[in-house]
Amino acid sequence: MFLTRGNALYALVLMLMLTAAGCAQKSLDKETQPHKENVRPPVTKSDNLVDKSVGKEPIKTSDDWGQLPNGRHFSLTLGLKGEWVSTPITHTPPFFLSQGWIDSQTIWGQSGNKVVFVETDKPEYRDAGFNSWLAVPSPDGQAMAWTDQEGLWTGRPGKQTRLLLKAGAISDVGMVPPAQVLWSPDGKQLLAGWEQEWDTAYALIDASTGKAKRLETKIEGYFLTTDTVWLDNHRILFSTRASTSLNGENEYGTGYRGDLAELDTLTNNYRLVTGVKDGVFLSVSGRMGNEVLIGEGPKGAAPSKYHIFETSNWSSYQADIPAGRAYPSPLGNRAIVITGSSYDGMNTVYRLSLWQADGSTKPFALVRAEDSLNISWSPNGLKVAVSHTISEPNDEGPSGSLRTKYLTEVFSAGPGSGLN
Image 1 (cartoon, rainbow, N blue to C red):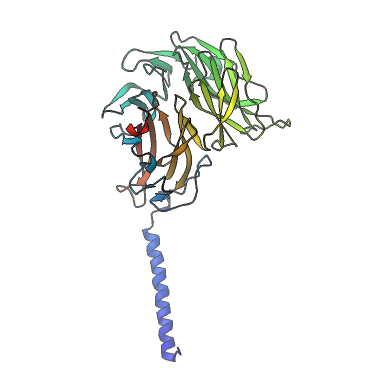
Image 2 (cartoon, rainbow, N blue to C red):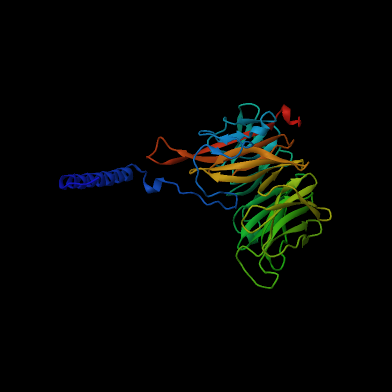
């Protein structure tokens, strides 16, 4: 095509008009975009399970996983439909997040500072009648221990309660209540922990009298000690970090390796029960019947492998549980494992797998969440509660703003599971 002088002039004018229109459109796009402070950037998670790539909904994985369409936040995988039943728990108070189970029909959690018990088989919930900073139910679910600014309390919700240990009663931990509390299996003692610089101070509290006994949980070359689980009525398992490498180097950061230590409260004997290499960190996932499930992985990451320990002699064998964050059933015959995730631009879609003691692992559910998940098994091992928050557009706020929504779902073993 040949351009005459007139055609060339026309083409130049047309080009200028298109350029101006493009600039105007960019300006319009800029004006219609939400303000910067209302845009939530992709969140970097604390473990290695999150795929930082941004995808479009619906999230699709494979035929085994199915998909999680727009507006859905929970979905059982195709292979388990008929075996498990998913039930949204919608009769909770505002800001409720489940923390665990009182019995096989009742979950408990906190709504702000209030402790609340929620029935899973009927649309009812009840307030425990007290506010708390931290709350822990007794092993039989009949009593609670909780803390507030006054100290450590115990009692049966709705009945008599007592201030078991005043804040400041133990002179070397300051005028604060404990930040960690664990009941012994028989409900007669409480392990209380106060976080201090580089470590935690512990005391054993008699649940009836409030009498406190300071515990010694220091091993040379180790710090950042954290309680994990009672092994029986007098032995407690702790996780602890090495501040000195096997080559003799010192570091007060997050440690060179993560080991496990056992405290016998009758003899006051505190000792390491593992001895891992530098760069290896052990974490306790929970009790599995009479054994303990221990994860192994690099620093700051979800476990890449699992071991099952016999706690009478600390012998162990490697479990065939897949890599990821595992939540074992109290019966020890299965576990929910977070085996992967993807980011949808606003929330994370987690892939939950079901591991069973016969060695099988199958896709279990997809869960959309803003951040981490609270996952807990019922005492009879037939239900799993998943509680979390999500981010969603706030239609009542400024353009582009987000709001947080609190959600709880219960997955129950159905007739096709062969479990009930």
